[in-house]
Length: 343
Image (cartoon, rainbow, N blue to C red):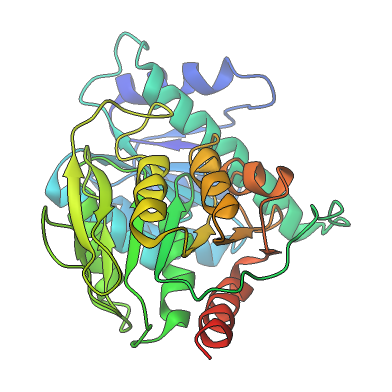
C-alpha cells in the first residue's frame, strides 16, 4: 500500500513498484486514516507511509496501523530535510521498519537511486515478514573461524538497508563502557546522519556523534561517518583519530564501509573487530578480507534477521566470519570477544 497526500507521488511510486516482478500495489490512499481503513479490507505486507499529510499524518497513524496488524512492515517516506529526518528516526523508534528519503519530485519516474532503494527495502521487508510468520530451516552457515590471538583495538560497524533498526537493537546491548572506540558507517544522506547519531546517543548507552575531522577516537564512544564523507582512521594504539574524506564513492556509496575498514586495519595493524549488519550490496567485503588476513575478527548478522542479506551475506559466504548470528546475539558476541581477548 502507498499512503501519500500527493496523487502525483502516489502514482509515481506505484509505477515503480508495479513494474518490478513480484511486487503488487494493492491500494493507494491519501492519508493515515484512509490507510487504517484500507488495512481492514486488503492484505498488505508492506506500507510506504508519507509523514506530512492532512486528516492524519504518518507519525500519528503509525501506532494505529501496527496495532491493527502487528506484522505490517512500514517504510516511512521522508523529505530530505532536518525535520523529515528527525520524524523518520522517531518513527523507527516507534516501530517503523525502515525509511526512504523522498526526492522533491518523482514526476518523471526517473530517479534510479530512489527506485533501487525503495524496491530493495520493499522486497527485503516482505521476505522478513514472511520469514517471521513461517520460519524455515536456515541455510547451512558458512565456515567460521577461530578467534584471533591479539585483542581488537577498534570496533567497526557497517550497515545499510535496514541498518537504523538493527543499530537500535545492537547498540544498547553494548553497554556504556567498551574498552575500544567504535566507528560506524551507515549508508545515509547528510541530513539524516546527525539525527541518527542523536537517536543512537539517546538509547542510553555510549555517547554517539558524527565524527569530526582530526578528533581523537576515545574508548567507549561511537563515531558515525557523516553523510557524503568517508570516515577514515589514522594514528596508532592509544592515539587514534578520525579523518573525513571526500574521495570518490566506493561501491556506489559515500560514506562507504570499505575505506573505513582499510584505514582501521592500517592504523591498528589488523586488530579490528568488525560487525557487519543488514545491507544491500557488498560494501565492506574487501575491507573485511584485508582485516582477516591481518589478524582481525568479523561477525555478520544472519539472513533470517536481515532486511537484506547483502553486506553480511557477502562476508559470511566468503568464509571471513568468526560468527554469523541473529540480531539479538550480536551485542553479546561483541562483548564476549572484547572481554575474552582483553584478558
